[in-house]
Length: 446
Image (cartoon, rainbow, N blue to C red; front, top):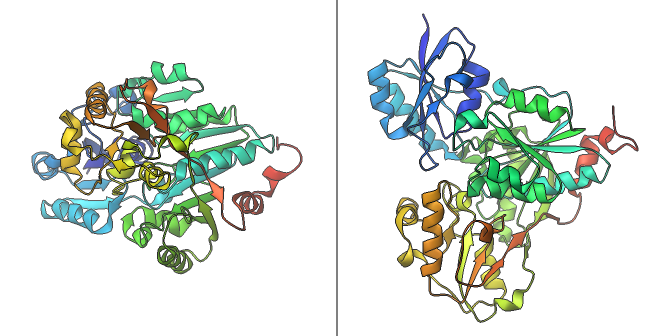
C-alpha cells in the first residue's frame, strides 16, 4: 500500500527532501507540507510544475500548528521532519505528537539526500545558526580563487516567494536581486559573495542547480544555512562552532550530525568568547569528532570610522536569523557599540511596530537590538518605521548587506562588518591544502 506522508519543514530542506527522496518514489504519496520558523511561508502551494506528474494539483503548505489535525484528517502514515536548528528535545516533542496520532516519525539520513557532483565540493556548515558560516565561505572562495580556480557558490535554499519562479536562481549582479525579488535574508547571504565576484546559485531544485553550477566552476562551495547538512557530498566538510554557546554542538538537530561528519572543525569567535567556552567546545569536538582537524578563528568587527560611535546614543541592527531561531540575544553590532564606546544602546522594543513587535513577543530572549526582519514588504516597512522612531544619534547595522539600499532612514548610519581571520595554526588555507591537494596544484584540473 502507498504510504501517505506529511513533510514538516521551513521552505528549504523540506522541498529538497521531497525532490530527492519522495517525488518519484512509488511507495509514498506526500499529502502536505507544514511550515514554521519563517514568517508568512504557509498558505502557499508547492506547485505542480515542480512536484511532478504524480501531483497535478500541487501540494499544500500548512502552518505547523495544524500538525495533529492534519494527521487525523488525512490518516497520515509517515511524518518526515525536514528542517534545522531545533533542540534535540524539541524534535522528540514533535515526534511524540505524531506518534500519539498514529503516524510514524522519521529523520532522513544525512547522506540519503546528498547529490554527487562532477566537480570538487567544499561545504561550509555549522552546529547552530550564527556561528560564522558566511564569512568563512567568503574566505574559502578567496583562497580557492587565489589558486586561479573558478569558484561558484551554491547557497542553502530560501524560497520564500513564488516557488514557481525560484526553481533555479543565478545571482551575479545587484539587478539579479531585484529580478528575483529577494528578501533581506536572501540579500544578506548573496550580496557579499556577489561583491566578491562570486556567482551564487540557489532555488528549489538542487539537482538542476548543481548541473548548472558545474558548467562554470572548477570547484563548488556549498554555503550552508542554519545548522543543516549539505545537499551535495562534500570532498571537504567544514563545520563552524560558537564558543559563546558551548555544548550547543551536541544539543541541536542536525548540528551534531554536521559535527560528527566534519573534516575541519572551526572554533570561531575566539577573540570575544570566554576561555571556558573555547575549552568546552574543543573537548566536545575531540570526543564527538576525533577525525576532524581543529582550527581556531576570529570574527573581528570592522567599522570604517569607529570614532563616529564614541559617545553616541545608538540603535543596533543585527542579523535576523542569528537572533530568532539562532537564539542569540545580540550579535556583532552590540560588540561594536561596546568596543567603540557608544554612550548608550537605545532599547528599540518600546518603539517596535507591527510585525516587528510580534517578533519580539515570539522571541523574548532578544536583547535591546533590532533584528533585520525583511521577509515581505510589510516587514520591511515595519523595520523602517521602527528604526525611524527610535530616539538615537546613530544606527549601527551589523547585517551583511548595505541596509540603506532597502530602507530609508532619517538617522545617520554606520555599517558593522565581520570577516574570517585565522587564529594561530593550522590556518584554513593549510587545512584545505591538506584535504584537497589537487586544487592547490600549479594548474587547474580539467
